[in-house]
Image: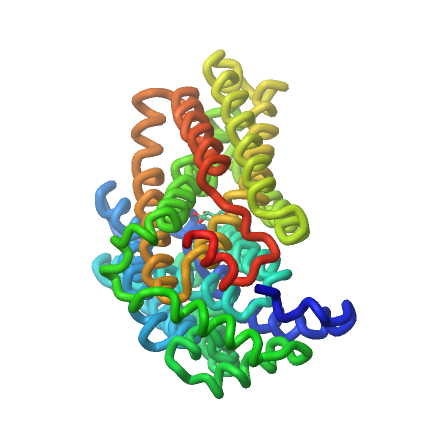
Length: 459
Ligand code: BGC
């Protein structure tokens, strides 16, 4: 099977991509909200605690409500994206982000605040299924990796913006503004998505062939939409009915194993121990003052954004697997060095040269994550499943990501306290080695293939 862009000249190809790039960028705004809303709570909670006298358990609920909401809504997204469409799933995410952020602004009681944060989480769950899937389905094969990586880029920008906004609003203790500002991009996402086309692949699934043909024509005006349509229809005809029950079928197992495995490994290798707890880690490493620890954390945020461009640049040239292997190797190496540094007790003795080992290792770890597991997991879970089962299978994979996220972010402080920082590094490094073996043994290369060609890998 050939891709539909093979006979198009380079100039026309870049013309072709600009419409799809605009569509991808619009959906990626959801990633920005995902990043912002997960990052903002670490700053906001300090001031929420001043306005509402709460116990540690309630504090934990306010912080983790987002993750629980994301996990729940990821499963709902599996139904919504199939029944009502990819576009509507992203519109719904925008509407929920906007209303839930406003609910947090006006919350006059802790239960309302928890409800608001849970709903924000629902927006994140919808976008983390809906956006990568939508982008993957509208993108030409040869740039799909770059376009879906825009989603991860937006996540990292959102995290960085959250750090900046929290730092700026901290003197005013304005936690309601910190949480409420997300309403603006939420609204932009909801309104912007109404102007975007529906995914042509979903339209084919609904037998709306004329609509699908017209969208394909817009996305890729110089290719033959009938040819692409025929490939999509052929692929659909070969698969089952697209029910949840089919996820248990033997034929889907290898793909599900890769998707669920990658999604969980992205989390259990410790990324959010760093993203959520960076200031504490820096303090444990000897950066005593809050200001230095926060500056180092902001540095991590900037590096996270910048290193994502490595993936945007290379993912469609070198492929997914080489980047995954290189990145996870880098994560393991930096974790081992950091573990050894903490084990020697040296990193905690002051801001001398050994304190900087922590900075160097965490920077190296974040760079390695940002060009590998960060973007490529969202990319691969949106492209490896056959169209029939894509929405459900992606929902299950995303739920596994949020489940593992919940596990890591809630256990990290306890494990670090009981076993020590060195042991935590070694545990994540060990899981990194398992990730590496998994990637090498199980993950297929999908670079340059159309979604319909990828689904053939599993037959
Ligand atoms: C992960 C998030 C993480 C973020 C960091 C995303 O790909 O899913 O859990 O916080 O990357 O950049």
